[in-house]
View 1 (spheres, rainbow, N blue to C red):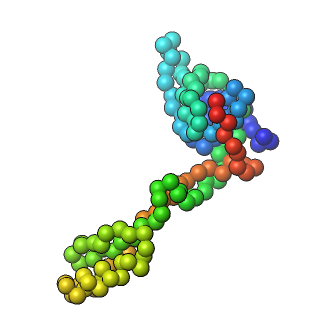
View 2 (cartoon, rainbow, N blue to C red):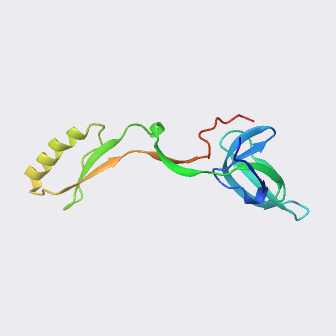
Length: 141
């Protein structure tokens, strides 16, 4: 990989890439636990595959997480748009077309005299790590 380092398992965190059973996997979460004998264990959860439990002092090949980036998350659907009256709190139903808010605002103003609205756009974003050297493909374990 080029940028890997040898770290103790207890130092690994979310977004780091670790080599487990010959495959590079992205860590989704890391937590500690105790073995029945009292020793400290680390449980690594991955984006794909089963979690791995190991002694906290285990040495792992790790590519540390790089800069974090924000990307559009399309799984949540397209953006939705709505308006909320800042005077009474009434709002139009969310729509996928921003132009559909205008008729509601005109109608609301005609009925109430209220003329100031909060425009609300809801879309989904995801924060993901960009590891050094570019993107990786997860290998299922």
